[in-house]
Image (cartoon, rainbow, N blue to C red; front, side, top):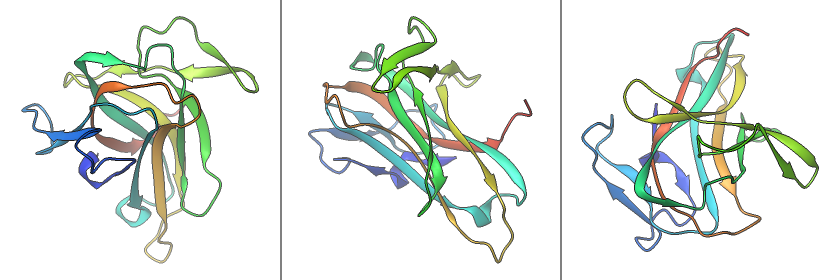
Length: 172
């Protein structure tokens, strides 16, 4: 799992918008808590050398909601996963598990939404996307994963992000 402390977060170093808090059930010493933004852009990177070669992977954002969480209900967030410098795969996710319906109307018609699921450790996770690691020590690339909503600019707060977990993709 990549810690949110190592992410690129728009305004993540400004205490008016994000704060770094400790939560006992987190794997990491600090997690990111969203205080208030309208431009939501959270991304993590890792080198493919740390992953097994010739393997399909899925990337999951691991998060919780604070007692007061706003701006994510019925809101499609764009998720991106891909090698740095190449075209990323894109899908739409919703941090609200109670969203009504499987699709949301977008600029290009109806689009499927990926919903979060509860994990055994009490956190929520949402699949950002999949990628194939060609791998090998001589084939070193960076993979970037993230979630962003930079078009509607609605206010958002109350999301707590632990990190992004990368694990072998489920065979479908």
